[in-house]
Amino acid sequence: MGSEFTIDQKRYLEGFATGINAARVQRGALPAAGSAQPSGPDAIHIAAQDRYTAAGKKLAEAEKWKREEHPFDAYARLKQQAKTNTPPKPADNFRWRFYGLFYVAPTQSSYMCRLRIPNGVLTSWQMQGLADIADNCAGGYSHVTTRANLQMREIAPKNAVTLIEGIESLGLWARGAGADNIRNVTGSATAGIDPQELLDTRAYAREWHFHILNERALYGLPRKFNVAFDGGGLIPTLEDTNDIAFQAVTIGDGHGVEPGVWFRLSLGGITGHKDFARDTGVIVPPDEATEVSDAIVRVFIEHGDRTDRARSRLKYVLDRFGFDEFLRRVEGRLGRKLVRVPAEAAQPRPAQDRAAHIGVHRQKQAGLNWIGVRLPLGKLTSAQMRGLAEIAHNFGDGDIRLTVWQNLLISGVPDARVADASAAIVALGLAIDASPIRAGLIACTGATGCRFGAAKTKETAEAIAGYCEPRVPLDTPVNIHLTGCHHSCAQHYISDIGLIGAKVAISDEDTVEGFHIHVGGAFGEGAAIGAEVLRDVRQDDAPRVIAQMLSTYLAQRASPDETFLAFARRHDTPTLQRLFALETGA
Image (cartoon, rainbow, N blue to C red; front, side, top):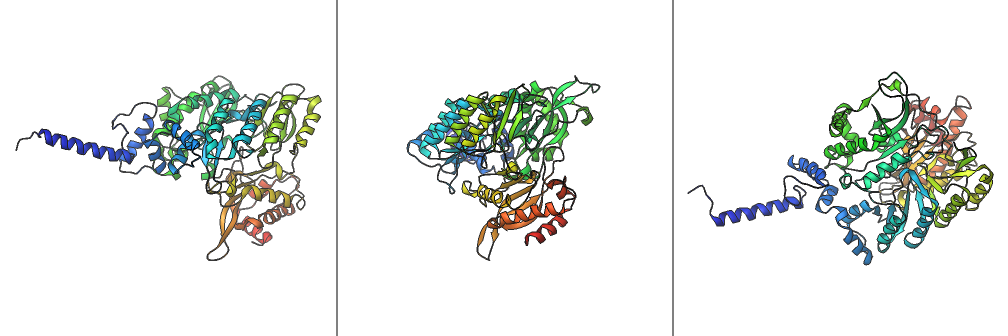
């Protein structure tokens, strides 16, 4: 037999190969076009996926969904589902998160929409417009999140497109606010108005924000990604909980670089996995922050895990490579060396004020003030949104600044108008003061609106405040964070007292909602992950248990000046476990 195939044999083999390739495309093993060299903005993602499949590994389900149809290529189907008021199936539920939409069944048979508000700053007229959207397309309220952002809930499928197009008509965005994308860009809440700030972060947060919006290659990452800019102001930004943390620092003379304000670069924060962003030794000129961020994200795109969702964050790439090798790859993308200085080259960051997000505070501009408004666990009714918009317009500079503490600031209020503005805020059913408990009380959505939530967080947080305030004479702020699940959206690991939702067994067959309790977490200088001291506390018992823990602290602190954090750190974990278990009867 000769070595050449007949025409029929060649056609058979070509058809067979085509069928094999089609099957591999369906499994996410080849680019849809069958090309060995993918092109276009999605090529970097396809190539990363191919490296895993070539090694015989299976892509995660979300990676297959992105590969089968990129979410930004499916907008027509989202519109069709809106026309028929059809809820999405799992693959589309994932895809629509690229538009900021999360279908949250079974807890609610509706969408939640998360916005993008760079540096947390919006105008009074934008807040007014969002109130109208909340009334017409959602549940008539919104929540301020721990990323200085807003989200709306109870959005019927038929209203989803009208809602996101209405948001964009206001000059705001929801694009990329969920799923495997770079989330809302946070910055200092008092940027540009803080007497002690080193740098106004707004321009840098906005530049990075618009770079993301206009670069499709930065969507569809191995997993979500967080970036924050801290300008050295009074209000903590929690930048060290982000994948990329830019912290403004002053570099003095004698270190081989131009003295002045630079960004210190830290990487790998993910407190839900018990890790903070770690200092790289690199400093970045502020006007190069976007370029450096882009290079970091692209290295993450190339090397982030596409098979195991639990280990697909930047932290695990850093753990695998080490910081030196990771930064070498970033430098390769930049085409230049990053600037490094010893830690002592940076002057200490100006002190933070744990209470500066509440109440009246003087701005750097003479005769002007910001007013920190306390919201009931981040919730705003549409009427309150309109009222705050009117106050910002009539009494302030027209800006409303959201914070990572689930509240907001009205800025630019003249001295002579502070009393009137404060009275108008109180008339809305809101407050400009807070008890030591409510000032640092944070809760995620929890089981009421999130399918991952194992307990009702916002309701329990309110119950804790209501129970403790008349019973425990606290004289110093205590941060209490309640999160519903291991995703730790309320960052329970970094609070004085952190509660994470859990199912508590009450018999061999039945469970109730409850919490495990951690203490001793902190952020910024002295950052630490809280240690678990109590397990399986029933939800209904949580207010009493927290009251007993706080009473124990007050009774046994070393001095009136000892904070709860210092008290917790003065004892080792076994001692705290025995102490709190004894006092609470656990």
